[in-house]
Amino acid sequence: MKRASQSRLPLYAFVACAFVMCAIPSEAHLNSTGVGPFYDGLIHFLMSPEDIIPVLALALLAGLRGASYGRRALFTLPVAWFLGGLVGLSALTTRPHPFISAAWFLMLGGLLAADAEVSLRVTTALATLLGVYHGYLNGAGMGQFETAAVALLGLVFAIFVLIALAAAFVVRLRADWSRIAVRVAGSWIAASGLLMLGWAIRTR
Amino acid sequence: MIKTTTQQFSKCSRVLAVILFYTEAAFAHPQKGEAVGFLTGFRHPISGLDHVLAMVAVGLWGAQLGAPAIWVLPVAFPMVMAFGGMLGLMGVPLPGVEYGIALSAILLGAAVLFEFRPPLGCAAALVGFFAIFHGHAHGTELPPGQSALVYSIGFVMATGLLHALGIGIGTVHRWGWGQKFLRLAGALVAVGGMFFMWKAVA
Image (cartoon, rainbow over all chains, first blue to last red; front, side, top):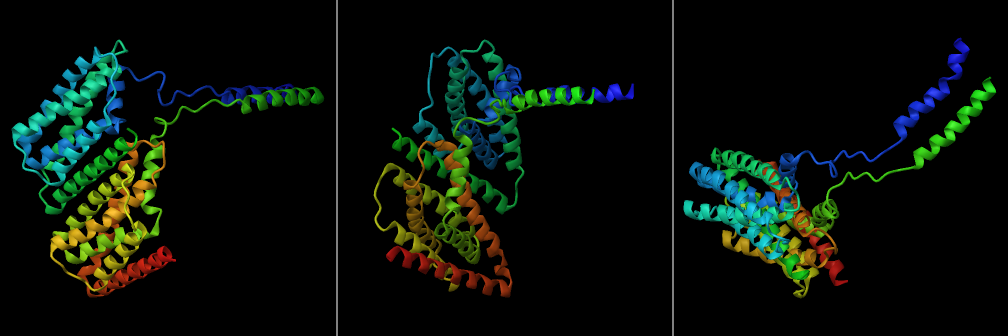
């Protein structure tokens, strides 16, 4: 009896190994399955530096100006983004213009680096324009999917959370060096914008 | 019985080997070119010692001069360097780039060595002037087919972190021995600059 079970051991080992080693695509990064439309939209924003960096720059700028500016950006930008996205859903195809993307980096990074004393009205206008433009591009890219509006909601949710966290973090900074560190981040964003502009001209 | 089992195991092993060699694509990576773009951008400023010497020297000098130069100079350098990089990308020619880079290490090293304290505007202008040469050299050397955005972010981040390294080292300036150490570091940067100037001329 013992001998018979020992003789089957290689067979069992083979079956176990076959199960372990028979590799199929892992789908671990959810390229094909997604995580549902809401979280797809949320993750899309978090994985898109061309979207996340201008939003971060605006949030930091609003935070440097004060709590009221932060609150204005917090509610204006996601709404504008969502409306722009809804309009973009019906667009056939569109591609982000590299000069405009570079200009957003340059402008928001430059304002942040200079700690520019922009008015609440200008902050609102910047948030609206940024939201409508990027939202439109996002919407145009998602238009082919039936659940695009839900994905857009997830994306807007991520923007809301990012602005809330970043602006609130900067509003409470009091030490000079910490506010300077925020401005240095702005100079890096503006410098990236300059290089992107060079790239855009080179590849035109 | 044992012989039958061994034969069975041998057959099974052959099938297992076939399965082992049947590999699938991982699908584990982000958009094509993006990760490569960031890493190549990040590596670019730190891949040449001549660039590293000048960028660290900017941080050292800023730390020696104190506020507001400690943050004005490291902000001015990446911004103007990016402008130089843009000129290089656009194909605008700039003569004597290698000499300019070597001279920047010599003069910035000398400024740290002698604790030169010009007005803030002059210091920023000097740093900005040489940043154009560094940026132009980087701009003309950029590899094709990379993601412009993430490459630029990596590039600027590495430059800024090199300044931060210089500022971090420069914080020893508050102590007597630290001031001597900084002047020695400035001398080393200047000597390095002379070496690169000799290489450029030779």
